[in-house]
Image (cartoon, rainbow, N blue to C red; front, side, top):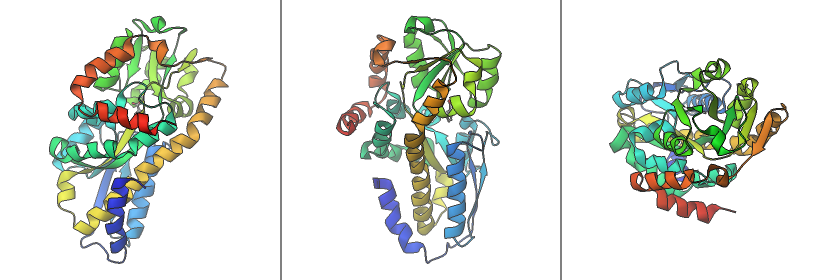
Length: 325
Ligand code: BEZ
């Protein structure tokens, strides 16, 4: 059990007998569609919180960007208009650049290693800066799969990515990576990706195995490059304004429970990632597995940029070394 969950857990256990002082109807937003692992984790968190509070608290989950994109939801969290969110760390890194270190290319050797890095005290300690810097409380990390490349045309080497309009999640670390590769990175939120690839608005996309398979992005592509070039962390957030108004007991209960449910997504991806990749491979697309050397100097170029922007990069590298197996 990781540090934050342990800290919250002691206090939470003590209060299961005591019902919360004031009932709350929380709203939790996220951008992923209803069948997505993050959305299911949010719903499970809400159901458990309702049960543990004897029905006093409830959580209504708003998936698929119903409350706006992540930038908008983060703003709502800051003002207290939204209570909670399960959000990409990508969006958080737009406000707190230190989190960019979590996107160091090839920081993680594989999906299980990514999980170990995210469960480290170093990664968790980074969440401490969120209340003062962003106005939110980070209860813990979850994640999605490692990042892969899906292309309408052939990609035999990194030079084939040169000038390609390649969809990225809108955040700086991935923009810097594909600029270093020589592609034409095109920031685009998740819901626009399927149509953009289908109608040729973009030539390629940066995506994880779950969504390549479940949302059928491969249908409009000839090539899948399993590059595993970055991890893709998620964070469970509570508005700092809302948090400040909660009793100590409720903070402990909600903090422990949310941290446990977002953490559970790590186990889901570790378990399921290879199965999705195998199914994608079986679709008959040209499928290549590449490593860091595929990207030439781009990884070094990224490291040069981000060693100046994130103070946590060296510490995370040390953790990555300690937790590699
Ligand atoms: C994406 O932007 O690619 C993405 C966002 C949330 C979950 C998974 C992927």
